[in-house]
Image (cartoon, rainbow, N blue to C red; front, side, top):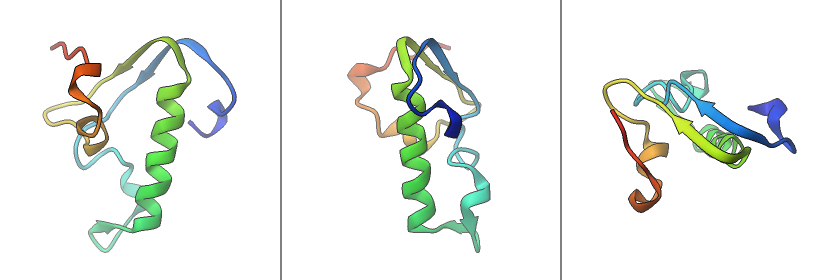
Length: 80
């Protein structure tokens, strides 16, 4: 995602957006995520989503990340 800044792609896939996995656990400290780490992950997620020109696919296993839950439901087309 870091290297995608300024670029656009017709289709973007963001995979592994499961609860407790995305935002990335590398930014977590002492069992929780620092405020700075969470803000950095939110900015990266925004970059990933806005790189899609036509289609954005986000996938998760079992339970979605908080970042997916923050998206207005009317903007999502949830398929299983």
